[in-house]
Image (cartoon, rainbow, N blue to C red):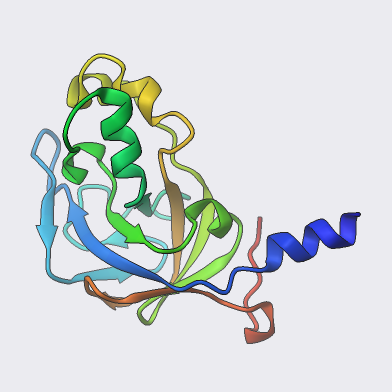
Length: 170
């Protein structure tokens, strides 16, 4: 049974797509959408207020675009603006849950899924009453940048096979 579970967990042939890049230049400012971003290994996204936090597991945060509809439904609203979620990258078409503990590429940039991105108390103010609880379990993924470069909306998101020489350190 264990071998079968390991095989199931390792099987992720889907490719995703980067839909949106968001940064917060400084504390208290709204998130800003970018048409491209430079990711720096071990530091984060240039221009983001968290850039430079060396070796943080939260150098980049990702959110599953498909979960925007889930949030809207739970909050009883028509739609949720991704900028309110305080996540950097909006991704569609590949399970972020499955990327935890794995290496993956967005365009030419190599990242490592470092764990769930749990909601903070600010979600209550940003999304309204119940916002924090609505985000629980679907808050996204924190990632480390292993190889930097430029990413753009439309870039593919793909898992890096262990045979490529990268193995997640988690």
